[in-house]
Length: 343
Ligand SMILES: *Cc1c(COP(=O)(O)O)cnc(C)c1O
Image (tube, rainbow, N blue to C red):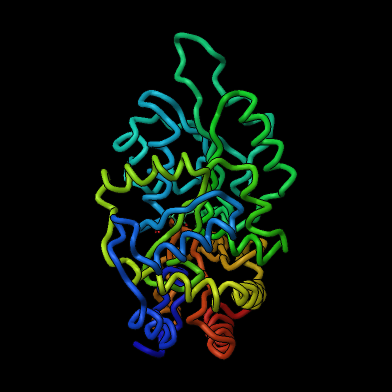
């Protein structure tokens, strides 16, 4: 299986020897006593990267989203997010189960939405209505295809949200991909948000972990919910060291993943029946309905030749580039794609 070119997701990376070495030699202590030096260092580094007072290491991005909901919202209140967003679709009903929060999904191209759309979604103050309490923005937008938000639009949306008394939250699972693509720093994106997090187990290539940042007050409250949800750890430096290694070694190289995604998209486009999304980061989405074959069919065809892609729905599949697929493998994948689809 080692020859498999795995484009299923950027979550499938394995720690490289350098990362494993960093993990093996990490200095550790009791995280719950806030005495794990490596975890503390990681938290300081991410707080600085995102321009926030403090940050907190968590086992997953999902827990970052769930804790943000719990800190910002009371049961019965509402979170506004795009209908495609992870926080609504892929967290097993977490907003309802963990925070007692209602979701108000909004629509828009590529996972974005306009100021007018947000304006319409925010409930007026009325005893019949749920209070709109949190705006969540995903950057990059995952399911729609890895799109990067316009900074000016973010500013407008967050300004409106603040005026109406909403907290603002950014799901930055792939925020560093957004920065690598746009050249806008993570802190510049983060400045409009009360809470923001980055994932280490996606394109950054660590095996586990995410870090959420915000004001000291937000982070103090987040600590409580981290314990409540069972996410408080002990010698977490062993895994925090992998995240530190990823920050130092794997964030600059995200641009390579974006170039690779473009190369794959161009190979796919040689078949005019395939509709390939505009590539901005490391995600390529392909609509194969015109081929009259299902996405599962094409997935199996590619898999039997050593390329794994993921099926999104009946006629849509996805390829995601990451640090465990190098230039040579991308070239090989393109050959297999051209052979499979012809033109
Ligand atoms: C992966 C992902 C998450 C969840 O992160 P985990 O670390 O897998 O829990 C949340 N939001 C987005 C946009 C993601 O891509």
